[in-house]
Length: 439
Image (tube, rainbow, N blue to C red; front, side):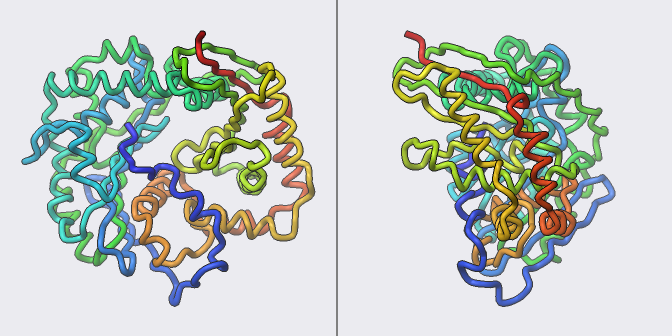
């Protein structure tokens, strides 16, 4: 469920603008404070000057890769009931009620190895919001009515993800080729398996793992750090730690070179094509040169055409960092392989040039908001508090150290770039999909 009011992409337009092109911070940006409660909850607080609201992010280290065999979609179902079931003094609510309550922004989504729940609210409500967040971590009162309400929503979402909306279908089908979901599952869940999930299975999973020792809590915005830490401890310190999340299952073998064609029941839609590549792990020595190449692809994406507002390069560096997808609609009369050949040619042209003098710095600025590779003034951060909080949580979870990554970007050589182009973007290192409306 992405109840995000446009937030999961973390404002690429903001990230791609150099701080040198706008105001510089008058003082060095505040350093996030990090503490760990005795029950294992990791807490990060980041005051932001001028903010009148607060973003609260709870990030669990459990996601779709942890789903048991035959229960693909269990984590996705838990995400839905987590935000809509009764908890503490809060009654059950619909997704629309969740939206209405958090008009400044809210989000709930399940990744491969994380689940995030986020809200943005006036700073005066901090204590009450922390109490409710603690109740959802420790006192979720799940009922059969919650499943009856949310299961159709989950099934509707996965239908959209894999074909009802062809643009999403092309991306997600390609993703399954380049990174097959473990144990025969599927991102978001397999419909038949979602339909079979029971209330007891959800309750047991929640009671075991959606607990402090497996969570990172981030507050960003109009807060005093000491007061915020004290309120978090007051609300969360007495919760039982829960059990350690078991190791995630590993994804299947990539199906490089495959072109998957599929017709879907979306008669008014246009065909969509996607070329997908595996992204390197942030710990890899290929990661910094890869980011430079991604910056090139973004910069040249207008060559692929498309209507205003369309983003043909899909790489969400923290939401879904395992894949880079390039999408387009076919030109009139193009066959699937011709369209994908056009995408291949675009990639080859983008990655071929030698490393430019300004590309290292440009990549630092492009990804600065996401990855902390440049100082961003609070006057910018205040416009996307969710993005700040989510970035801090995911960087902590992924082990991304901004100073180390910044140094890696500064020292990328042309040889490094050539190696990344060869090992990541070679013609035999991708998979393709073609989604067309059924006649």
